[in-house]
Amino acid sequence: YEYDYGHIKGAINIPLSELRERVDEIPRDRPVYLHCRSGHRSYNAVMTLQNLGFDNVINISGSYLALSFYEYYNDKVKERESILTEYNFM
Image 1: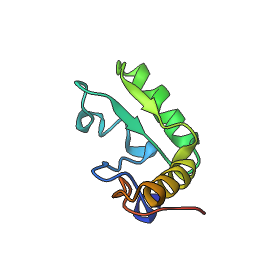
Image 2 (image 1 turned 90 degrees about the horizontal axis):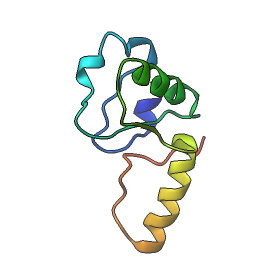
Image 3 (image 1 turned 90 degrees about the vertical axis):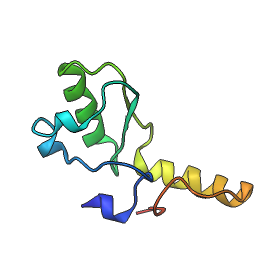
Image 4 (image 1 turned 180 degrees about the vertical axis):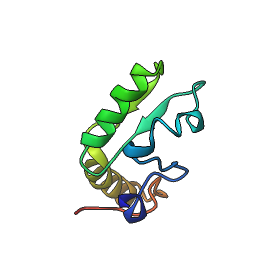
């Protein structure tokens, strides 16, 4: 899984193919941020969750690749701890 190559700390990995079966693991009382390597699967996951009645799901713009670049730069410049387990540029 791409999850093993890096993800947001504290993230829960639910592959798109398992989403409907595991929907009860997803909180409805707070925002849910979705990401995948390219942004396509997470977009499909957002659409699926919205169809299942979730109204506070957000697809992270630009995918995990873009997030990695953004966080890497800001972590280095601001000398802060990363919110990511790993940076993934590939």
